[in-house]
Image 1 (cartoon, rainbow, N blue to C red):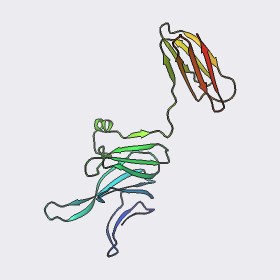
Image 2 (cartoon, one colour):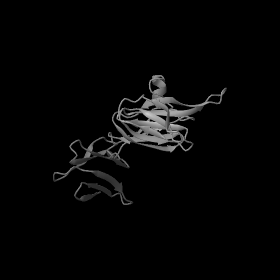
Image 3 (cartoon, one colour):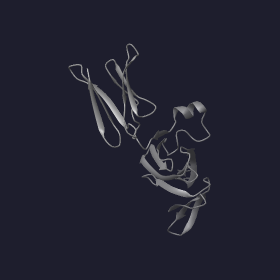
Image 4 (cartoon, one colour):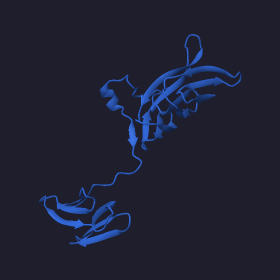
Length: 209
């Protein structure tokens, strides 16, 4: 059995005899999430500390003795992590207070590819963990043929530019208090252009030639 406590300690127990096999105190605050691989020889733990540690069961090549050891440690997120999911033997996901999902790359044996505090800055950038935002990014521009449609900084208007002349063709000012949430532009075979935008209340479509 593997357990984590409010002091940040991960403990591994022998349930047959009810004895403690080994403990790890590398995290400094509450353990909130644990994950174990399919072979039950690698454990991941994290929590309020926001660092993730991997603990592996290693076998001494000479004596054949098996022992749980800390294999690597990495901080992928800045605040409390409340969930760990081992998506595959080489991919670990974490999520928590920051609301984004962090994707860690794992080596064979469960070690983090970019180990915290051990690799060079260049290697850390090359193996940087991926962060998936909780909400999709809204487009800031739409392009069709020579025309470029952009949302202004006020979030209440759209501006259409000619890419060839780089001049403003038309500006659409939205009425009401709600910001533009999404927009797009399309043309048809007769060279008519359609601009569509929506806020949290309704949707508007404009046609021009």
